[in-house]
Length: 385
Image 1 (cartoon, one colour):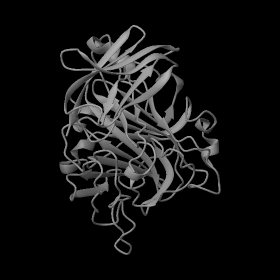
Image 2 (tube, rainbow, N blue to C red; image 1 turned 90 degrees about the vertical axis):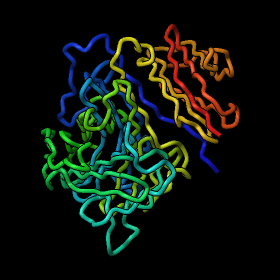
Image 3 (cartoon, rainbow, N blue to C red; image 1 turned 120 degrees about the vertical axis):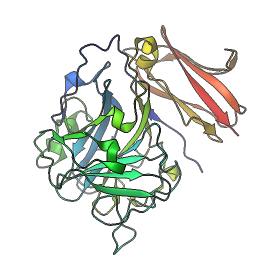
Image 4 (spheres, one colour; image 1 turned 180 degrees about the horizontal axis):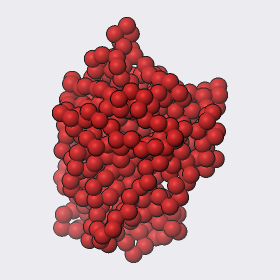
């Protein structure tokens, strides 16, 4: 049975201008002044909420929270948490605009060789990212190992993928010093100019300030700075979809997934998990809107996913800022005529998700309108047979 969809989606950022844009400080810390709304401000894309224990999961190491931020030229992603020294690694999967990789619900292909966290161990074919089934299209992946190496994978199709180190071995220091990766040319060009920073919490995640506030302000983290142009995010409103995981060096998946597997707790997922069969939706959508014309949409962070929707529920995700406010969510046709009301009531501050149940809309193109207080955002929804 298909899981009950609960999507994590991110807010978009609205700017009143492009002058003197701030930047995230790449130092391995998600600081309080880096979290908020606006250019180069981190927005939470989800958290791993179970408490880390020594008898389950990967012990006193793992993920706490995932953040993203954007400027006119950069995409930032921070994975708050702690990596066990050695072969375990934080992995980040990306679905970026304009690329064709592995479609959602399709097994990831095996990658030849065993020099990275993504490749196949020739002595044991189970020890591979290949065979894992994601709920998002997968174009790219990047990992930071507990040994300080940055490794990348590029998925060209459902049958073709390659991976290599662009960190030069143990090149990423654990003291927060930013490092620029190298060798991201040719097929690896989407990672050109990527910078990475990591601050380790010694001896384990309990020493990470984020362990006391759910991965909030002050968390030690892996911070990535990607070039938007290299990723193909030249459109200011381009959407990237993300998923983070804590995985062993031989491709054994821990319990720590963001967006998390609903109700899974500290139970490890093992080799080759099928995320389409697990509770929750392990996809976080993030859009960087750099135009004052779309300020309301940026504040509300409206996202509709999957889109197009074919035979499954579409999830409408949006934010209510600051305080409880009246919220109305409606579906209209392209002429603005109301087709369906999904919600019309007050909601508390926070990120909310509503499902457009499968089968309730005929094939066609619709507009999803979300009004929160005095702000309104609209997104197109395509329903196919």
